[in-house]
Amino acid sequence: MTKRLWLGLLCFILLSAQVLRPRVFRSNGVDRINRLQLPVSGGVCTTCRTGLLAYYSFDLQSDGGVDDTTGNYNMTVVTGTDRIAGLVDAGIVPKCCTSRLSSTVPAQTSFSISSWIKAAVSSYQAVVCEASSKGLFIFAVGVTNYLDFYSDGADHLSATPIPTSVWTHVVVTYDGTLRYYINGVLDANTYAYSITGNFAPKEYTTVNTIYRLTEGLEETAVFSRAITQTEVTAIYNNGSPATYSTW
Image: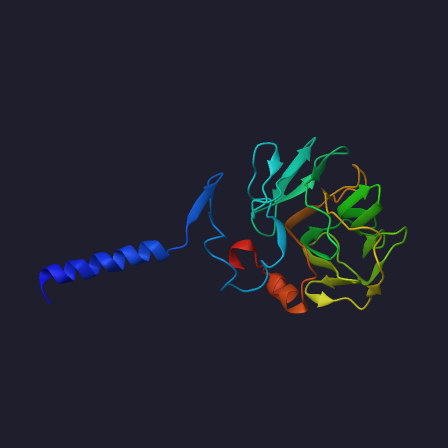
């Protein structure tokens, strides 16, 4: 093979590698893979981005808010929050009594919320909620440290309490039946009922500045569908959380 042919082949290989490489962009100094260029494939969960509305790592901070890694629904911060050492890089807690985080994630008929949380002992603490003309919806840790989804004027408690003051993976899903998962395990309590209206997960770590989650929120994902046991297991990943970049 002539020298000219060798050079032509080398140029072709280098050009192909450049074209096929997933595009990476920077946000606040952090590299992120453009999910439009790298769709659901590989990683620990090949389906976890299906129906993913928002993903809040709390590692990327835009001016006056919290970035949604998907680019869909960035949060605004009212009054302020404290950054804490999280399970993966940084986490977040409300700074004081009037602090809260809010987003514009739209209402959903089916949904899942996956989050790593730290809960205090024996106090009602909100993970995410919506207070609207449809009523009050709260995904929270109840006063006895059981998970609770409050809707239609009633509490719906998990059968198992969560540990306190340690990072715990919690998931609530709804598709006509409400289910909880705690550290990857399906809870014994399920509730088949119709939620009045659709739930829009808009306010995080508080309910109108009360019921504050005082010890920490991390790696929070919102879906427009009920994720499966397989997906929950993959996200929990034996306690070493799979994150958006590894899905």
